[in-house]
Length: 425
Image (cartoon, rainbow, N blue to C red; front, side, top):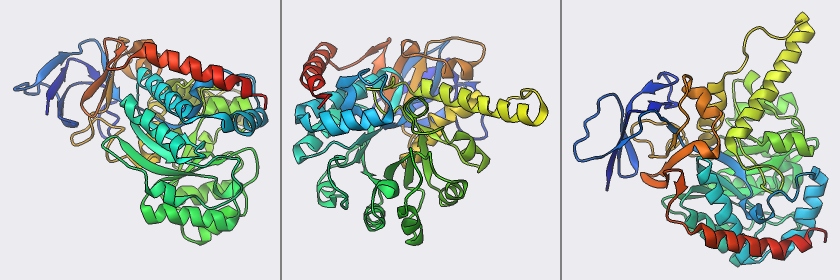
């Protein structure tokens, strides 16, 4: 296995008890980080000079429906009702396996270009095994680290998750399986309990939507069955009462906010502040390219600004003026896009921090600035110079590697031409 030494960068490790940013070398052996520090021995290693750059953990997009990538921007003005009606009620049933493959591949490559190294791919358009297999094929072909959250089409009546279909699916060095279930809001209590139990028996993350309405009786059934755990992932979380949020946080459950989508479509306000007050924090996702750009750093900035705005309003109501101190830091927002995303996807022991024995998933940012944390948070895809996943370069010199982008674009256009006429029914 290759040894690589990254030398000269300002490093944001996201590791506890280390500075926000520091000058350090990073030694990678095979797929693993073996050392982080100054003056590391370069014997036997390829030395990569990253002087003037920022190196940080790869970003984690904990919630994205990559299968919708061919319809990018078509739903910019959709409400949540429009999205459900047009995407799930109309066009989803016209997807071919090839549409699933190319949408997933293109969506994952777009994530790589933006500095995302780990993707929670929430795939809920799997009417046949062929559709599922095609989506996984696209995800694996991209080279991204993927958590494939297997779901079921919304057109299927309330039923327990098809665990036989789930159990036949492979995992791999960069592929982890999870369950994308309807969850307590959208299922009967019996179904919700059965799905949570199936995930627990398999040791899988179980992820579900919760937004746009009050929590259903399924939540109490799942709680009473003792099935809430750190592998419970709630997407959005809007509509949950303070008591339910506390119950879930106390159980170790994670939350994934997609702030731009939540604010624009009508899911409800992001639960960021509620979680922070409970000693927790959100992970971040971008939801669907059909509605919002799939940029995790933009999601982090929106979540940060939105909650700071709420905090200023609260202070103004109590004291007559905006707050004179910052309530949330840029470093916290970066943690939502790295550490918390890894936790939400059950990968906190592998990714999200640059430390010895962690996977070598990192990004090199060409945006020199006196404040590395701010520069990283404010970076765009054009600033992402290089991306490494499991010790292998996937982007370098501002260009994706080992991919024929021309063919991908042509196939994505063909898929869009097939799907767009079906958006209205």
